[in-house]
Image 1 (spheres, rainbow, N blue to C red):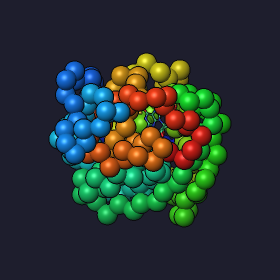
Image 2: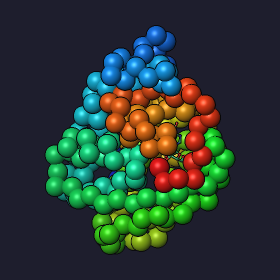
Image 3: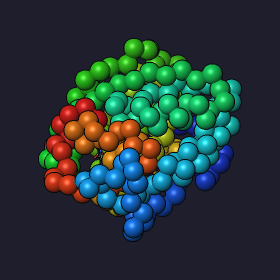
Length: 216
Ligand code: 5GP
C-alpha cells in the first residue's frame, strides 16, 4: 500500500486488466517474422484500443490535478509515449531507470536506481507508468521509494500484469492486460535491447530469457 492518498478511477473497467491469452497460430508477419518470436499475445490494435480506455479514465480521474507521469526506463518508454497522448490534460513527464538483481527469470527484490528523477515530487500527483509487473518486487520498491518523497498522491498504471505470480496485492489503479506467465517482448519490452520496437506483444521462444540485472 502506498503511504499517501491514492485517487481511485471512476471507470472500473480501467482498474482490472483485460485477460489476454496466447493466440495459437497468430504469428508475427513480415517484417517481424523472426523464428525467435512465438505467438502474439496482444495485437497492436488491441494495445491502442486499451490505451485509449486507460487515457480516458486517467483524464477523468485527474481533471483538476494533472498528474506527473513517472516512466520506468527503458521498458515503459513506448507505452508512456502513447498513454500521454491519450490523456487530455497538461501532464508532465519524468523518467527513472532501475536495475533488478536476480536469476534469469526472477527478480530478488533488490533494486538499484540507475537514473533518478529530475523533478521534485513533493505535493505532486504522481502516476507511475510501468511496462510489466511480474513478481511485483520492482514495483514495490518504486512505490516505497517515491512515497518517501512526499507526493500529494501516488498511483500506478501498468500495461501488463503476469497472472498468478505476485505474493502480495499489487494495488494498481490502472491495468492494461493480464497475460500468461511467459517471457514476452515487444512494445518496449526487450531481449538484450532488441524487439522493443515491435508494435505488438508476443512470446519470446529462443534460448533462456536474459538476466534481469540490466536496466529494463
Ligand atoms: P518484477 O518481477 O520485479 O515485477 O519485474 C521486474 C522487471 O523485469 C520488469 O519491470 C521488466 O523490466 C522485467 N520483466 C519481467 N517480465 C518480463 C517479460 O516477460 N519480458 C521482458 N522483456 N521483461 C520482463
